[in-house]
Length: 333
Image (cartoon, rainbow, N blue to C red; front, top):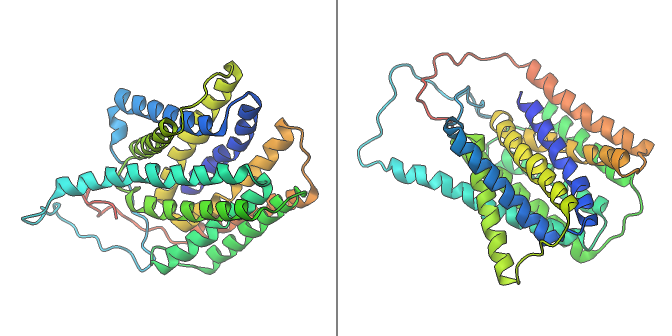
């Protein structure tokens, strides 16, 4: 289920490039796209939480296995917090981190990405951006959050090589030094974003976490719009249609499935599975925009999908563990 959620998230994110191009053709500016995307997503997620309060509760389930061994579980009633503990402060810190993920992390990453897109080809930009699965995996291993098993290493190599073939198969890429620097900064920011999100994804429900992230991003971009003269909303109905598609499919659904998948798989596996995104973008560009898929791109897409198979085989070969003794009130790691 975790792998399927990550793949669905990658497919939704992969459609955003197509929706964005169609929105640009309808007269939507990059700044307007970003602000409306996050603001509309925040409103939709906030309404969902109001209508369905149960969505605010994090789903209970088996914790992800620690790379250094299984977490010890004790039977018996849940322990009371020690005297002097400040649970309210701890609870307040998690939403603050989630808002910061959007206000600082996601808003910065998206701004860097679209700034780079104005200076360089989308294919080369994506090629630089998709260095982040390697960075996430390396940092997660160094921090002790994940273990670089042979299967995970093979999956990372296959996914990275496949992404390279998909993007190089497009051809006609032009290099721009500043654009490349912005693209690498976007990849680095997204790496930090994923690793920080992994620390709170077990403590908040996916809908609540996504709503806080979107609210933070919308707040930052809204403040920037006020300082730079506002946004232009004078485009037609087709522009609003593609903005709605970006907000619902490539933001709300994409974020919910990513956080739910991240909770189940861990940062490095989620990042590797996210390399399915450029494969979806290339396929949709062929279907919607009339672009042709080259044999090199098809080979790259097959290689990316093979990384999914490697990860699934690794999980299938792992003996399932019983978590029936885990107390219901025991907090997730």
